[in-house]
Every structure is written in structure tokens, then in C-alpha cells.
Amino acid sequence: MSSGDDGLHVIIEFGGGAELLFDKQKRHVVNLPADREWTLKLLLFWIRDNLLKERPELFLQGDTVRPGILVLVNDADWELLGQGEYRLQKGDTILFISTLHGG
Amino acid sequence: MCSVNDDGYEDGEQFMPKTEIAVTEAAICKKCANNKGNVILRGKDVYCKVCFLASSTHKFRATLGKSKIVRPTDSILIAHSGKAGSTALLHLIKAGMHESVHKRLIFKTTVLHIDEGAVNGETLEERKSRINAICEQTQNLEFQGYITSLDQSISESEPNIHTMESLEICSHGDKMLTDLLNTLSNYTTKQELLHKLRQRLFVLVAKKLGCNKVFVGDNATDLAIRILSNISVGRGAHLPFDVGFIDNRCPDIMILRPMRDFTRKELVYYLNFNNLQIIHSPELTTKKDQYVSIQKLTEKFVTDLDLNFCGTVSTVLRTGDKLYTEVGNNSDNPCILCNMPLDTTVFDTEISAIQATMFSRFVSLQGPQRKYNTNDVSKIKINEQNEENRRKNDNCCSCNDTGCCSSNKSVKLSYKDVEKYLCYGCRLIFQDANSLNMLPPFMVNAVRDKMCLENMRQEISEFLL
Ligand SMILES: [Zn+2]
Ligand SMILES: [Zn+2]
Image (tube, protein in one colour):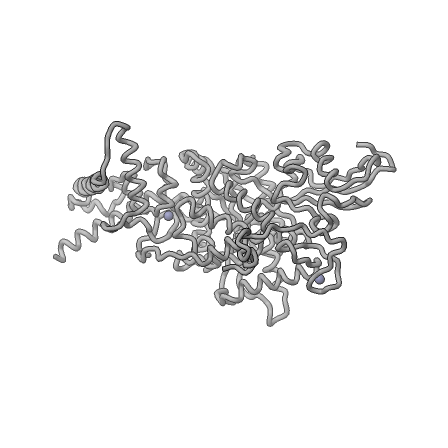
């Protein structure tokens, strides 16, 4: 991960059990390389390659998140933001929560 | 028929319209028509945070209120697993207790957490930290709480419970519980058994603490999954009790499901906006293959389908609500494990699934050479009858001296006897356990008591004749 000032600074959070796939660490402050325009879809692949510790199929399915994982960007559902097409902004908080646990 | 899909039926091609992803640059809340949207429900309804939270509270109060079942004099045990449903439930109740006088929720509450770490592969450390987190959360929400462990459900004696302040963790019953689970060969029956043991423990603890009702956190998504999996595991007859708002199979302790109108998605939104964390603990099938059990596969089926057809959960749930069977009215003879009226009574003229299963087992055991005809079915019946008679003859109570019934430990039992007191679904749980000393002690004892009672009844009836 490059840590230059020119990178895109975002906060990635995992909850609802999704953190288990990431060494139980819930909050990750990351600096994305400034070499491209970051969309949520690109971020998913970046997470898979850089943060994910095990079982990618429990996080991703094809080029989107696995059914049952809710994505919120700054408290708004990503479905309202164009899902994978959403362009990340500096300082965004992206939260991935697993809904696969009930009672 | 459900209104959501009526449009789909008209062209005769689609049953449920596939949800189109609404790419809305700045979706505005449909309720206040002012704020930017935060959540999207049913694939189309956009709400802001404020309106979503207000409607959640309203929905919860409506579920509790419309039945008029919950009264101010009630003492309610709230089952808190640390998961989304029960965490939101605690928060909603707490908020309700701080409402203005005429809207205030008034009833006595006690929180119960059941420690299932032993079967879910948690280390002692992990269990401690989970229980710590649960206790802290319960106290932060200003509730009184108790902890118990799932093994308390299988012993005969009253369950041991600890106050949350003591932060105690009991692991001495672990082995009994894991041994019991290990006798079952597949995860479908393991999950069924755990569910039944949990329900039993709710009732036992409620009795011990003097509570007359139990709240559980089952949500709409969970219940839609249970409707389909219940049918698959032979418990279709139990649907109204297993998924309805009210489960009153136990006459003195009612189990209620006040979160049944919330989907998992709504719960996650709710918790997130209230800064509430779920306290995650692994379950029996966590991180296992999706085909590991009927329940897990059903979960995948429902959640995958719901992603593209967001009416799935509510359609299944509303259809399930309408399914009802007249389970035999012998409520004085409930299943010793799940407490439902026995659905296994077969009348002579009836052809039942149980007979079919019996026939199939009979055929399989005979080997490939033999030819069969319908008379064989009656042979099975005759065999059963003979067995029955033979058993009655060497039953200790027919030698009616020395009052052997009073020391009921001396009644000779076989697995067949136990089976008589199990409903169809519970028989399937133990179908390959087949040995008495593998069964939970409370079941064996219940059968002993029932058989003694029956024998006594028979003796008395001889006198009366
Ligand atoms: Zn609004
Ligand atoms: Zn049963």
C-alpha cells in the first residue's frame, strides 16, 4: 500500500461477522494509490487482494459482494449510489456488514 | 394472493418481477420528501435515517400491541444471543420504557444469554470475552441479566443460572452436550436438536425465574428460512408454533417473536444507525459448506433469491402464516422433546408417511432378492403389534408385586419405547442414534414416568372392569 499524500484516503469497516474474514479487525484506514479513479467495484478487488485473509467466496461473488453482505457508504446503502459504479471520495467510510446471522 | 406479485401474474411469464437496481443520483426519502435517502427497502422504498428509525419503532410497537397479548403485569424473559434480532429487541424495549407515560412499555424484564460455545467450537477464552461483551451490553442498556449454558437443557434437574454480574462460565456440562451431538450423524439433525434444546431451556429458565412469557429475536428472514426447512425436516405440522408470533405449546409459558416483521437487512440498518454492535459468535455450521445441512442450504436459497426478488421473504412468511394443520388434539400427550402434540398416531385405515418410511426401511433390510406385494405392509403392522405384546408381557409392572412402579428406575426401556413419545420430526433427529444411553437423561426419565403412568392406568382399569 502506498502511503503518499496524493493517495485516496478512505476508511473501510467490517461488521456483523464479516470481520472474521479479515483477522477480526473491524476498522481499516487505508490509502489507495492515486494511479486510477477508484470505484466501489475496484475497491472490492483491492480488498480481496490486500485485506482478505481467507475464503474469498464468503466475501465476493463474481464482481460484487456475496448475497447477504450489506454495503453502506457514509451510512447510505450502496444501492442508492449506483453500487459498484460509485466513485469513492476522499474520507468516505465504507462499511461491509454481514446480515447472515439472525436471532 | 400477495399483492406484491400480482402484476407479475398478468402477463403469465413472470411470477416475481426481478428487482431492477435503481440508480438514483440523489434519492430522496419517500416519507419526509426532504432528506437524502439512507436506506432502500423492498428494492424501491427509499427512507432517510430519521424516518427509517421512526418507522422501525412504530412497527415494533404495532407487532407488540396488535395482539394485546403482552400485559403490564407480565414478567418477560428476553433471550439475548448477541445477534442482530435480540440486540435490536433490547434497544427497542429500552426506548419503549422511556416513552411518555401513555405510550410507555410497562412489564418486568429479565435478560437471558445461553452460552453455546461448547458446540460451536469456541475456545474458553473466546467464550469468556463473548459473555463479557454480552453482559456489558445488557448492563449498558439497563437490563438485569442471567447466563446459562445449553447443556443445562439436557439434565433432569433445574437449570443452573448465574447473574450477569458474576460473569461465570460453566464448562463442566460441555462434554455431555458435545457427546450427545456427536451421536448424530449429520448437521441437519444436529441443528434441529440444538434448536429444540434451546427452546426447552427458555421455558425451564422462565419457570425458574418466575417469568410468564419469553421474547425471542427471530426475524422475518430467519422465519422464512425456517418455514421451508421445517417442512423439509418433517415439521410442517408445527409451523404455526415454530414461526408464528405466539408459540403457546407450553400452557404456562408463552414464547413470543416480536421481531418477526423485521428482515435481516432492516435489523442491520437499525443497529448501524444506533451505533449498536452485534456480538458475533460462530454457529455450528459457520464457515461450513452450503450443502452441510438442510437449514444452511435453505438459508442460501432464500437469501440468494431475495437479493434479486426482494418480495421473497415476505411472500414465504405470509404464505407460511396461512398454513395450519389440525395436529391431533391429544395435547395431554405431547412429544417429550419439542412439546408439540404427537403427530405420529396412525389410524388403521390411513396411509401415512410414517408407514411409507417404515415400509421402505423394511424393504431395504430384506435384501435385493425378495419380491413384495401390498400384503407386506400388513406384515409390518403385525410385527409391530407382536413386538408390542411381547413387550407388555415382560414389562416389570405386569408382575404387580413389590410395587416396582414406585421405583421407576427399574422399568426396562428400549429405544422403541422412547420413539413412541416422540413426534415425527423428533424421531428423525434420533433415527440413527438408536441407543438409550445416547439420549438426553430428561427424555429417558420422561418416558419412564409416562410408561409407569400408563401401566398404572391399565392396572386400575382392570379393577374397574
Ligand atoms: Zn425522511
Ligand atoms: Zn417433537
